[in-house]
Length: 448
Image (cartoon, rainbow, N blue to C red; front, side):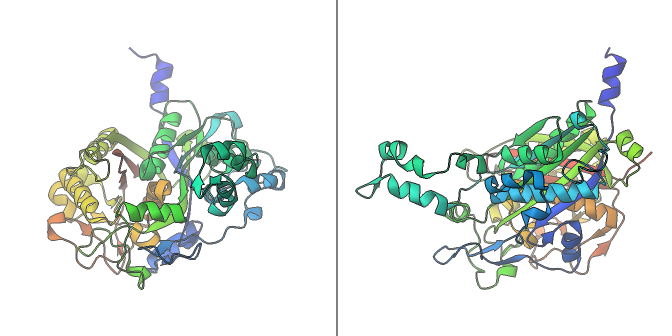
């Protein structure tokens, strides 16, 4: 029999008290949710670099970020060592902390801190951060010998052209590190790098950390920018990028539509503040929802390129989340899927949804975010989860864009214009990666 203290830790309830989204639709939850209900798409022709010559030339680019607004003076020197991915994470974290009405060292160091720093941590999903090619070009040029790259010259001469702290801009753990330092959160600082599933896995692990009693508050989510030449090139070489709508960017990303021809790269961050229920109540703050179930699994195809056709990993993740939440499929009132807009992938995911929900899948409202903001990599699932929480608060589901021809065999209910109003007691978010990692989270309205 488990000791009473351990049992009480396992019973700790975890709630969401802060939400933020940085995406092609704007910075912060207000701009994001407003754009969703106005049926706005943030996908445009790429501006960050000249995409001429690439088969795909569109992306979901987030607005310019002025870091002096989100980083205190004491930490501003560190902004020189922030890649775009770090900037996105730090910005979203600042907004989420403020939304949760928290005062940390990074918000107002002159006012009393209302948390115990050693009981607060950070868990952020990160991607493969692409380096700035202009920074790297001079070093690579120095390391060439008769127009061929030389490892010997790279070691003796090329690397000397890089600043000593250059690598610190591109390590995936630096997203959580900067957030921890800025806000003086002295608990665990963890990073998960599992591609598009990273954000959900990070939130799920943070959920477990609080439920087990290791922490009382966690800043959790994901961030990544795929809007780089290397990020776009990878998608094009793997034939995953949309190429048919370069002159109609808003129509390029078409999750689950019969006319889908590939994904659109994006960038952004989704961050939530998780707290133990009584910790949040003592602070007297509003609660968005309660985290009720988390599931994760792994199942990959033989070629590591296409998802496993039966989407067995996604099915297992959703089953686990439902089991922990002690819910039946028909008690879910909103589903935010991965919806990457690559035909074979959408087909597999639709099959997984039908496996779990059966005929109810034709009634369950489904909303896919990718058509608005693109595939934001490690941020995608975290943004999806934040979206589900915001929709739950609104009791309203926006219209899906770019899906006029949904295959009947998918058996899905993608919401159409106008937005529908419906009570959302429980919402599920699910995600998968090309490497087979899968995750699912269920949030529900708080019940005493």
